[in-house]
Image (cartoon, rainbow, N blue to C red; front, top):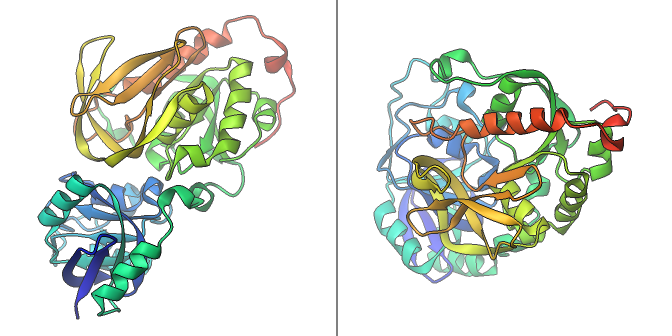
Length: 386
């Protein structure tokens, strides 16, 4: 049986079925990571997308439950050059093929991912249909053209927490034996879940005594009643300009002048709330090898990325703190007066080096400094439960 990936421009790539059988349509993007395909599969930011891995050999370490970034995968499809038939990992619970089948994810192997990646780089992220059940490529091309663009899909609604919850699972010390982390157990962080990754929550819980996760459209006043020392804005899928309600609630939080830290989609939403502009990149940044320069220290960090959108036209009250050395896009910012900052990349992902983990410690220092200030009405309100 053949599998096909048909793009909206009429280009078709053939391969063999992998994972669940079926047909899915969405935006196709490529990820350049040599490792970390389990984290890619379970990153909620890939909702609505078909992911192509550029590394030629995927699946050799299987799937380990402890490495998942969410309870289940949210991406639509998965395309690889060669799926390993052998799992060589004592920690593995499932093979890649079995994991995809268990979660109903349509995949394709034996595809020319090099040619596919070059095509996406030239023409941009395109709508596509991936099928292991329809043997008519022309029909799949038509379905791809009829697929709504990702900007029109309510993807955050699909991945956010349905109810507030407490997160109490810190990082296993064996994962980061040599990394120094700040500890302030008296602090409470409220994390907006736009599609938050587990490892972000672990790093927050490592450093503070309480982490409350709230759904994406939780009113700012509800967050205020929880009496947090800081608010975290998470990663997530889709177009930030399609979330005006979230932007409005963030604007209300900013009026409170509480410490805020944003990552990825949270960075974009924070920028929109402060008057910046968001735009879509040609083919996005997806991978574990993006060089980012810290303009304050001059250091270059090797970072993990997963985003299709970026910020531009920052207002004067915002300062650019990080840039991408590949294309010059904005990778970080901070407010010149208010206690808030954000980055476009993923410091929790640690793609080998742990260059960016200090951003979580910076958030802790910011909250401690803010806590020492005279308490106003916001901090004096009676705390609610989660």
